[in-house]
Amino acid sequence: MFPKNKTTSEVDLEQHELLEHAQTRIKQKKRLYIHFVIFLIGSVFLVLINKILKYGEPYDWFIWGITFWAFLFVVHAFNVFFTQQFMGKAWERTQREKLVAKQRQRIAALQKEIETDFPLNNINKKKDL
Image 1 (spheres, helix red, strand yellow):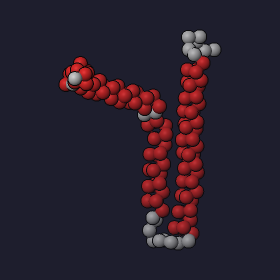
Image 2 (cartoon, helix red, strand yellow):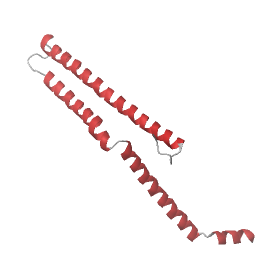
Image 3 (cartoon, helix red, strand yellow):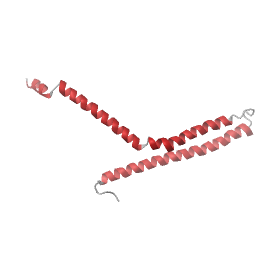
Image 4 (cartoon, one colour):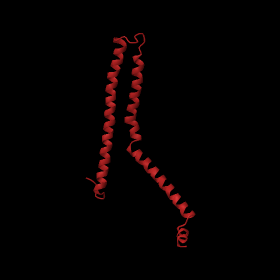
C-alpha cells in the first residue's frame, strides 16, 4: 500500500497531516452550512418583522438586510471553496519553507560577517596571553 522506502514515522506523519487537513475542511464546510441555515431563518424573521409586525412598514428595509447578509454568505462560501484551495496547507507550507530558507541565509551571512570581523584565531591568541 505504501512505498517501502518511507519509514513508518513518515507515513504516520503524512496520514496525520491528511487527517488533520480533512478535519479542518469538514469544520469549514459545516460552519458554512450552519451559516446558510441561520441566513435562511434570519431572512424569514426579517421579513416577518417588517411585514407582519409592521415595523418600519412604509419602507421595505428587510431587502437591504437580506442583501447584506447574502453578500457576507457569498464571501464566506468563496473563502471556504476557493481561497482555501489556493491558500491552503500546501501554500502555507511553501511560504513557511521560503521564510525558513531566508532566515537561514541571513544567519549564515551574519555568521560569515562575524567570522571575518572576529576570527577565532585572534580570540584564542588573546586568551593565551
